Image (cartoon, rainbow, N blue to C red; front, side, top):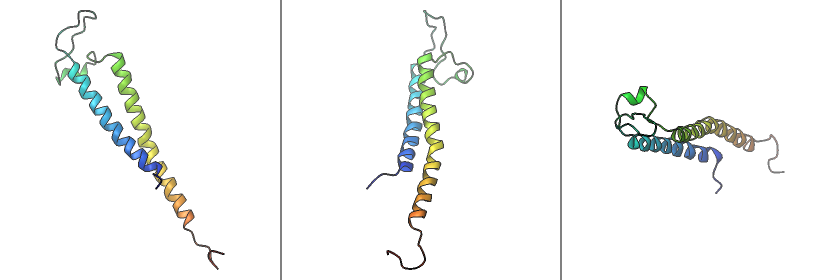
Length: 104
């Protein structure tokens, strides 16, 4: 049985949400309360209120990772209902009856 595009997109949305959440948690776990000697940045303690207002604890590579994961998830969120609508429309057109003798 062929898997529908809307089903694949739904799985991708759920997987993207989980992957983004795991990436955020891993980034927070790598945050340190001590200053970095190379850059001089002080990274806040894990899950501290300062994290929500100060983004110095996240590196540019981590930022891009979150941007790509979130962007891909948002694209799938937007495409999922469109694909489901197109599939329903195609199914409705295939099941349409024509008056008269059917099958001839």
